[in-house]
Amino acid sequence: MTDNNKLSQVSITFFGAGSMAEAILRGLVEVKLTEPSKITVVNRQNAERLRGLSEAYGVVPAIEDNQKLDALKNADVILLGMKPKDAASAIASLRPLLRPEQLIISVIAGLSIATMHQLLDRPQPVVRTMPNTSSTIGLGATGISFSETVSETQRALSLAIFDAVGMSVVVDEPLIEAVNGVSGSGPAYIYFMMEAMIDAGVQLGLSREAATALTAQTVRGAGEMVKLTGEDPSELRRKVTSPNGTTFAALELMRQFGFQEGMNKAILRCAERAREMGEAIRAEASASEPRQ
Ligand SMILES: NC(=O)C1=CN([C@@H]2O[C@H](COP(=O)(O)OP(=O)(O)OC[C@H]3O[C@@H](n4cnc5c(N)ncnc54)[C@H](OP(=O)(O)O)[C@@H]3O)[C@@H](O)[C@H]2O)C=CC1
Ligand SMILES: O=C(O)[C@@H]1CCC=N1
Image (cartoon, rainbow, N blue to C red; front, side):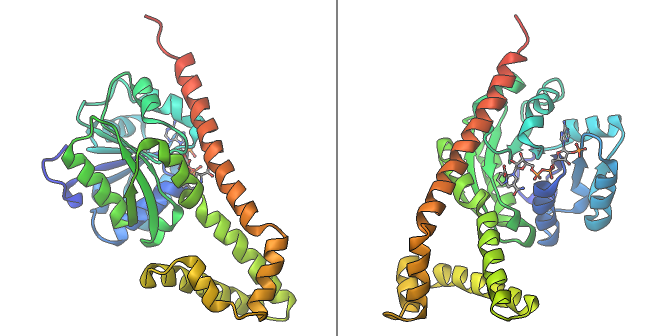
């Protein structure tokens, strides 16, 4: 690991280069905090995908086996971006390659620091994160927690990576599943709501284009109002809701349909599902542990 935390001087290998990896690397390249030539992308088999990322962002594709090994051995930071089901075998494959000071950053839902240490068979510096896809446009929201072996420099570097693509909050590791429930999966809830808003607008006679534009601006404006005014969302809601007016009538129906309760239960279930997925990876790691 380099002594200074300037992102531009750090080499990052994305081990697993799918949607979430693209969101982060695109953000890093577009805010110009990392040279594309310092970013390498590795997949299991999809070389076309790597060539596409290289063409779009100028990052380096590692396609041949020796290129993959070099990319993993030489990186200052390895960002794990595969699906949870592929994580155990992929991380175990790193075991013979890593130098003790290489920093591992994971975005994998449910995967704990303890399981990563178990799979690597050593207390490698590990950062467990839960970002979201809005990192693509520099508006990501990421929860971050660190293993005890992460140095101050590596902490600063990790925060710089996620702050470059949005904002981040450091949380104790057991709260990463809560972050998953709120903001990791959060964009999907908002898109789901937006789909319903757009469909209703079309049903009422708006063109799909107009309904989409009005909905997107409404969501954007509401988010910015919470951020910029610092007011509680419930207070902002009250300001929209005239007594016995149109919003009042709409919210009354939403309450009847259990909107808030449904949202609450969905988020708790999301966090629970992250824990289940983490447990499945831990069980796989234990089952494949080398016998002494
Ligand atoms: N999408 C989201 O909104 C968020 C996702 N996450 C987490 O990000 C992770 C990735 O999700 P997402 O980007 O949606 O997934 P994708 O399916 O888009 O990408 C996964 C990538 O991992 C690669 N891969 C799989 N196995 C290996 C391996 N053994 N070695 C190297 N590369 C491998 C795949 O390559 P190939 O095609 O060649 O197999 C693929 O490019 C997940 O763990 C998820 O929990 C976290 C926050 C938000
Ligand atoms: O759905 C998933 O499992 C991943 C984790 C957070 C967002 N997408």
